[in-house]
Image 1 (cartoon, rainbow, N blue to C red):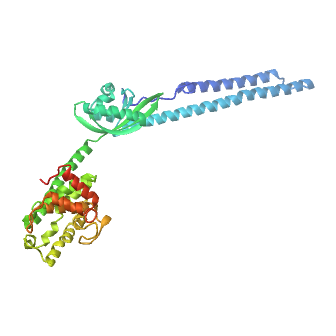
Image 2 (image 1 turned 90 degrees about the horizontal axis):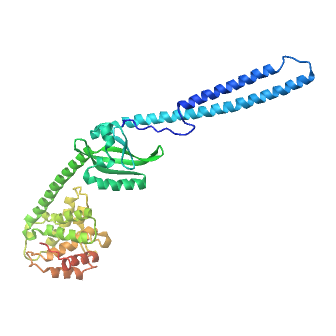
Image 3 (image 1 turned 45 degrees about the vertical axis):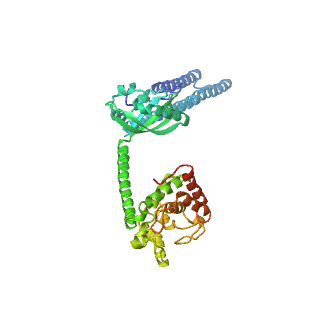
Length: 415
């Protein structure tokens, strides 16, 4: 096999390279010869002068016949010569274009390979040989499927069938070099026609560096995610250290809120925002004096108002952080209620984020089922009865139904 692709020129009676040139030369020579013979015959057949009127008439007729024969010879000759010249010019243009394509493929920085529909290699440029580590003959003996790692062969077979249907396709695979090292590749293939048959033209791009970069970015993202998670947990613990009676409350609320969100069919990305907001939803309580948070008796109205400010404080703290989710708004709205009786803004219905509606139900259920300094823990059943009685009034009906289903039919627990 050669690095140069098989240049396939048009075949047929009007295409033949040098043969066409020879034919044109012979045709023109014959035309000139016929014209010369006609002229010679004319001058041999006619005297130089004559006084016989009948002879003059005969000579005039002969002249017309001669001119007619000359025209019959020259006109087709000229037309044929022009036609053959056009064909030769077109043939040269096609040849030049094909030679340009050969140089273009050879100079390509990506591997370019052509296979027949059975996978047999028809052409491979120099980069294909170099990147795969084979010489020309070795690469020619390899089937298209043999270039791929074993675990990718079935996938490649499916992709080739799809290529036959669509005519062009881009997919990823892993090729095996001669030294058995693996090379992740992106293959852009299309079906072409050449020499009366269908072929697969593939541009194969080595994506080893891209895959390495993607893996590095993934690892960096995971480290960053762990760092963010640690920071979020540290901030959440800061609140719980000041209020030991609510230790673990935010994490339990986040756990219940996430399963409610999943039960409602929210996408995972949105559920992650619910989890982060749930873990931080009471961060604003760092503004509330610890003696108020842990006081066993009833609070005075001004102290209640101070506790209610935690939603605004939490928003002010979190709004400065560029989360990919509306964490600050969820924290700000988690005490709003469907009928507008909540705080701090008193908004209602659809004005409340769905995440905040979920957080509000999860917060109430967990708080009622946990011990507080001013009352003992209530049962989960009592907490569920409370949200059921207020369904459509204080709490979203869909959220309430999802929460009750999780506890009564799916066995959810805070543990």
